[in-house]
Image 1 (cartoon, one colour):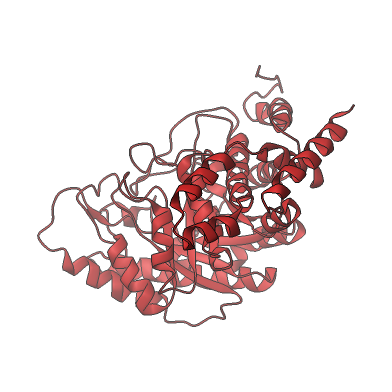
Image 2 (image 1 turned 45 degrees about the horizontal axis):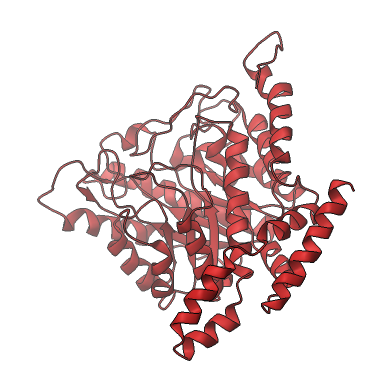
Length: 432
């Protein structure tokens, strides 16, 4: 029996098993296919971007680590790597761009001068691949961010520069959404804050609010552009005070009717982001999720199929929040194969959603409403050992992507034939 037949046979058995629980596996597979995951372009080159030939991450409260060989050096290489990763991930997805990933023909264009022409090739590439695009202003790795403050700076000239950058980015994002026929989420995150305890906490937040109001003053159709703001607990250089805290942005998003970004790496380790979703969506129409894996701090590790990820997916499914939630991955790991990092994280996000859809939710809701918490707990534990892996394998088979770890063979072959040639001028290959 070949692998295709084995996969189909295993799925049929799993389908029958789930049916006993009242779960329709075909409906679950249809549901997860409708959910796009936005891949972070910055995973492919360690947040370097292409503003200058030797562009690299420089400050801003974030840090990329690792020197795994073969990272993308050009936009063409980055797109090729993204194409490879996307070919190994079932479904139709999106790519999340930062403003520093412009195509400027090696001619420096400052951040407040960027226009959609510098991203048209990205739009054309996305259109040819049936992808959506999301966008982020880049408020770091720039001389005007060296003091640790951008939109909340005391310096009027610095603050105005970054306001102009934010305005330019919204115009670019709106054009992306218009051309691609899919709303582009433009997410604002700034690194502003103090290393030590400030005397004036109020002033920077007032300036930030005023700056954001100026940036968001121009109106665009929500069919083209969705504005979002992202908080953080702390960062490198802003350990004691972050201007754009969760409380600040929660109030701002609700009062301005824009999206709030919940980044799973931007809260205290004991906080559960899944528990915030129902509260936030009581007052907001939509949210953005940045799914990361924090290890003791916002260290942007590759997303794994952890209890936290499962809890996040379960809350989205149980609360019927998926139509109001935009899911993006946010991590950058230069210590492993960067294409594999994309694939691992995205496949895990989809797996988590599948596992959530495979739960006997109606039965569990009935038990809960009847106060039978014993049976609710018992069924949840029994569910953990149901054959979800067979359903996942069938989903991959159905959408012509490698089953199980077979995708790794393709990544290794790509590494030998493509990535290695970025390192060795004689086209010699590295051993994997």
